[in-house]
Length: 108
Image 1 (tube, rainbow, N blue to C red):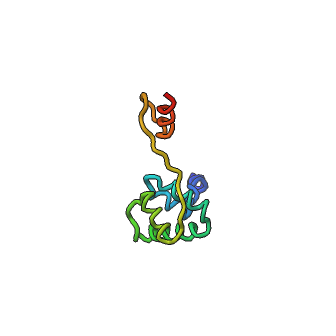
Image 2 (image 1 turned 90 degrees about the horizontal axis):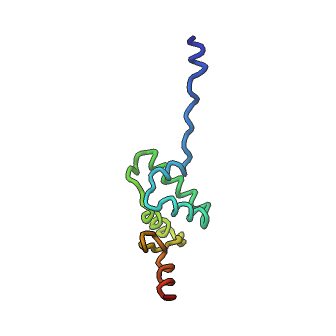
Image 3 (image 1 turned 45 degrees about the vertical axis):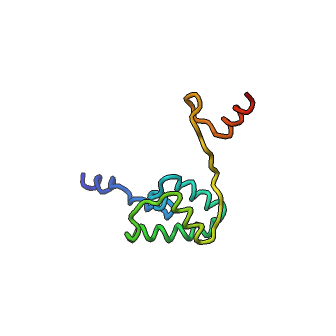
């Protein structure tokens, strides 16, 4: 019976990648910023993610990182890129893009 229990022992846990560690502390569009950064600057983003993940693992970084803060870090490093943004408003109980609402208003 003990042999069976040893054989059925759980496999070693999968260690998270650097990106998974960093994504775990992102909030408020943080993942969107990270994805955009990877698409524009894959090598530089990988280096930054590696450094941030190391800081998290060492306990030097314990707070969550907002998307705006992450974007600011990239900009301070000279890595500039834009995110797709839209302003959405309530119109007849539904969220619609502001440009769509203004377009309908002009047609009326």
